[in-house]
Figure 1: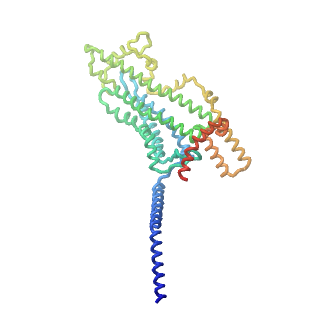
Figure 2: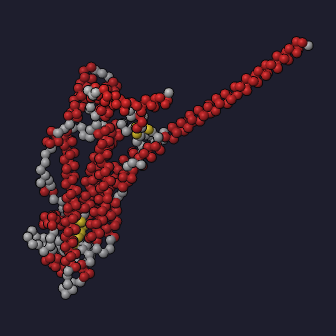
Figure 3: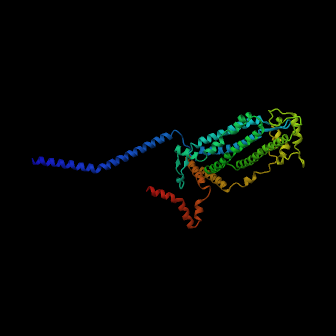
Amino acid sequence: RKAAMEVVQRFKKSVSNRFQKSLEHGPRRIESLKQSMKSRSRSLNRLLSRGHSSGKKVLNPQGKFLQKWNKIFVLSCVIAVSVDPLFLYIPVVNDDIKCLDLDHTLQITANVLRSFMDIFYILHIIFEFRTGFIAPSSRVFGRGVLVEDAWVIAKRYMSSYFIVDILAVLPLPQVVSFVIIPRMPGSKSLNTKNLLKFVVLFQYIPRMLRIYPLYNEVTKTSGILTETAWAGAAFNLFLYMLASHVLGAFWYLFSIERETTCWRETCGNMSVGIETSVSECSSFYCDDNGTMIKAAYLNSYCRIEETKSPPFDFGIFLPALHSGVVNSTNFPQNSLGQNLKTSTYTYLQSTTIRLEEMRVKRRDAEQWMSHRMLPESLKERIRRYEQYKWQETRGVDEDNLIRNLPKDLRRDIKRHLCLKLLKRVGAHV
């Protein structure tokens, strides 16, 4: 009996001890179970997000494809802003019957060119939704962390230049020239000029606002826009000709507007005794009915003469009207650039020293790698490092620059560059 009692007592003690231990370790096990469930849910969410984002490829802003595409898009933007002023040359004056006509050949050409250039803008908008960006908090050291979340990329783009790009790509000139102008009743001449002028100015502003940040982005990522100095000189010459082209287009349109102003004032002063009616002056569009009496009357009071006291003061637009350029549907190719007094040598002589130093360093590096017979993989790594170093420092020797500064400035610079990074490391520790 004593032995049986001892066995029972030992069994009770073991059961009670196990029960107490289970009570003590129970909350810990529950907590560990919760942590494991949380970690599994996080890993599942990561897998789901990766699977969701893997359907759309995210482009690296420092990749070779985007660097080439940005250069192509900047050049296409410059060409596109040179196409828009062509719409201002569509109105043409018919001097024989004193009416305003449309150059249909130029109208079709301008619309085709504008539609073709809009394709580049549409592709650019699509690429912007697929292009990642470097997180600002990770730019202190190294290449930084590339953000690849599609929603974050779309939110960032829509809060920056999305509206500007949409306004720039709207086909307003095509709609105005092909749809609205042919359906205008009454006096189409004034409506034509005002609509074309408003549309071109309305879309010229967002297009010009977009070129400058794009140019800065290209020079920031790839270092240069043109590989040679001659290409840079040609690009600057094209910008000069673009400015002249835009000013000339507005001067052309304002010259026509000045002549139609003379027509309107003259018709308003026509007396009823003359063999014409007021309805004949209601419109100056060539498709409307007009009489030779009105043309003869306008020729007498709206003569384009370079005299001291002309019948009507055309102001600074008299040379354009006197040259007959507003009456012609052909481009004056024989006078293209005859007053252009410029030289490309100014740009060639002012090529930046740092850009030349970069080219010399690249050439020396290529010669050294060829002399040492390095493998292609190692050569490519060296080229990528040189390109990255140029993008980060822009050719400035930071070590030498900081070394020549006094201690207090060096301390403040290091604090500015490293303080945020140290705070992040301390928070994780």
